[in-house]
Amino acid sequence: MDRHITLGEFIVENQKDFPYAKGELSGLLSSIRLAGKVVNQVINKAGLAEILGKAGQENIQGESQAKLDVMANDVFVETLRNRGEICGLVSEELEDFIAFEGDINKGAKYVVLMDPLDGSSNIDVGITVGTIFSIYRRKSEVGNKVELEDFLQPGVNQVAAGYILYGTSTLLVYTTGKGVNGFTFDPGIGSFFLSHPNMKIPEFGNIYSVNEGNYVHFPKGVKKFIKWLQELDENDRRPYTARYTGSLVADFHRNILLGGVYFYPEGTTAPKGKLRLLYEANPIAFVTEQAGGKCTNGLRRIMEIQPKELHERIPFYCGNKVLVEKAEEFLRKYD
Ligand code: P6P
Image (cartoon, rainbow, N blue to C red; front, top):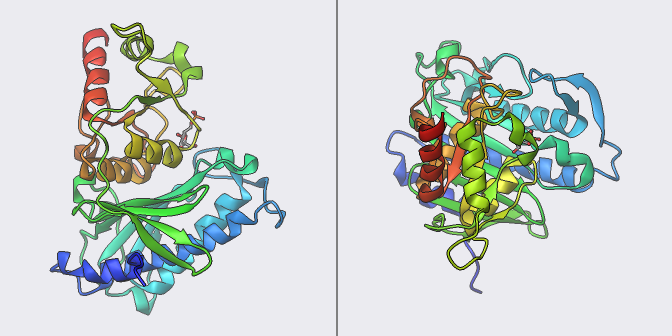
């Protein structure tokens, strides 16, 4: 019977891409797969399990944490700790990094930075949410306790990154620097199957994704870019259309498949933008570049920026090269 390859088979088949890894990175990706299955299962029955709504806690971002946020964070932390491939973790939900110091983590060479459940404002209304993850080799000596420097690495140092999209179907999309591949979860079998091999963002796209409710707060160049997107073309047709869900993973995944640009600019209410450099911008940037797109802060390549703090925010323009460069052109001209 002809069937798609599973994520597990794909990881093993492509393990040769990591000369230095003796299966640790494969094991790490497998543990992310497992945690994703658990989160997916809980999310799909959230309405029944009475775990919607606020957990009554606040995370580092000062946002009220939905109960599913807390659940997702705990599932990923424990699954990754127990697999033993990482020595530390940063999560949007946690103020500081976690050092994994169990015997099983002693020789671990990797760290993970993640947003366990991005787009949580959509959770209670049944709109797609996602997990975003980024994997680095540690810089400090293997065997010692993980240090802050292990997490404050520029995005170009990522060894793998990706996202899990909990939507009409559940997909795991990731890159290890050898292209981007997407796997769709079959709940009947309990496996992810290769459904989007070698993903490439179309060279041209007609979708733009931005929260225009913030228009008055945007820099002049951003306003000019948005108006440019809304102008009629020479045939009096509207070449672009707006799509924005309030969930980065959902907006990004649609745009990487159909072509387009997502941007979350700086503005008076968000002087550095809203997205976090370490566990939203960098992993999405890695996937974008591997799929042939571009990702900048309006001026510089996101992945070359040296992080200074775990939760620092950054302006974010991501998608087709043509559209990102058009945004940069307006920003240079007006700001
Ligand atoms: P706004 C979710 O909180 C998130 O980080 C992204 O997933 C999403 O694109 C953005 O913020 C939505 O922010 O200000 O438009 O509601």
